[in-house]
Image (cartoon, rainbow, N blue to C red; front, side, top):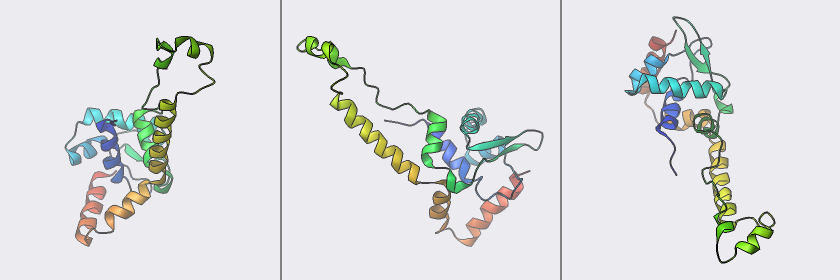
Length: 165
């Protein structure tokens, strides 16, 4: 199981939208320069985040992005789902129905007996999804910044002021 690098780009970039003053936005150019990542790819990630209701885009010369709702209401899973989609990672192809030893048995009642492998994999994915739903952007901010020095916090705030419009 592997999420695309877009999830990492999204989480790290959204961190810098946290705490922006009302009405201030940060552009893709500034975020991509900060992280040393592709502006084109980050733009595609933010398009998905916008469509997923995570961020709001502000058009224009001084445009950029801001969070679309409070950080406490945006979970890690919301971000993963916006970037990656909502499909389950494990896709059961019901190959047991092609099993030459029991093909007649499964052909008669395939839906009355769910595939136990699919059940276990789906339950595992549900646990992961629920865990990620418990972690919000606000939780991230609280956890990450609690050990920051005042100078590090000030450096972030200064960068946000310089980069926002």
